[in-house]
Length: 359
Image (tube, rainbow, N blue to C red; front, side):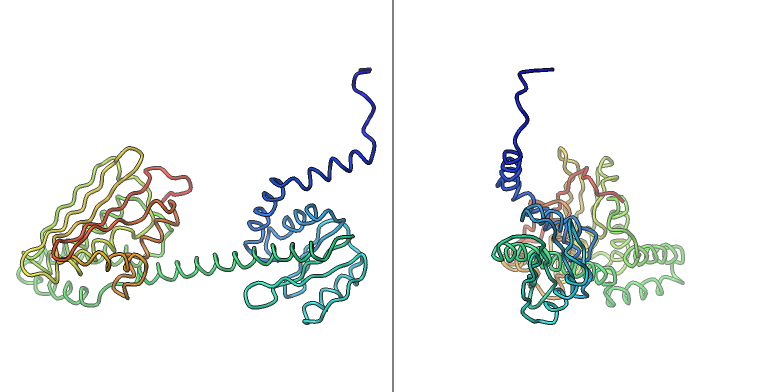
């Protein structure tokens, strides 16, 4: 026996040590952040039980439950009788002022403009502390709702982007193909295959990511069709380094940039226009630029477009910018260099390797 170990701690010492650990500021902050993550799918989501357990430990109570608007309850620790808890939850959900039934306490959880659920506590705790815990829960639920709403809006916008094939472009492309059927059937057949590739890629129901190789193939088919439509008015240069062709990127990040260069840069100008598309490796990043020598725009107008204030014609650019920042972080996104009558250059910088991003 090691006589230097000393006597075992007394019960009151153990309780004091647990209390200090429980109220450690860093631990409290980490738990609060974890609660927000646990409740991202709401009070009946898969993380609700973990959130209840964290809150019970923070409040240092024997039991704690979370109920959504249906009355469905997730619980951690001891209960004080199923019927008593259900009655108290129903009372709060009906909008009544719940009377505490020691050791039970029920606090409404308000998120957004209305009631989102109920926090139920078993044990001795100040109502102010229970209300603060309910406020944490409300903030977490509201944040989850906002994130879900933003994700739905982004997906809807991406679906709109996939379906955004200009009727004017389709009509012109098919007219050119039709006119070549007799004079140059081989070229007509080739352009029809390009048109099929273009529409297939634009409308495909596929995953969130693809490769730069696929993106460059899509823009090359689009530019081949536009060269057939615009004739000598459009010149194209596409240069891409082989080492970046396998880089994974969000689906449809390059095609909208090239389409905007044609529609808003080259088509409005008189005479011949040039579009240059390049892709190269720069250290751990891949840098793609789409440049035209068209009419350009006021830099303030470019800022409005990236902020989503540019009207329906700019939906594609704003969508691409938001998706890049969402996937790679706020320091990524589109950089637009432009001036009136000086053309436009749009630069995309993405990591060559990003965890979780794969075609």
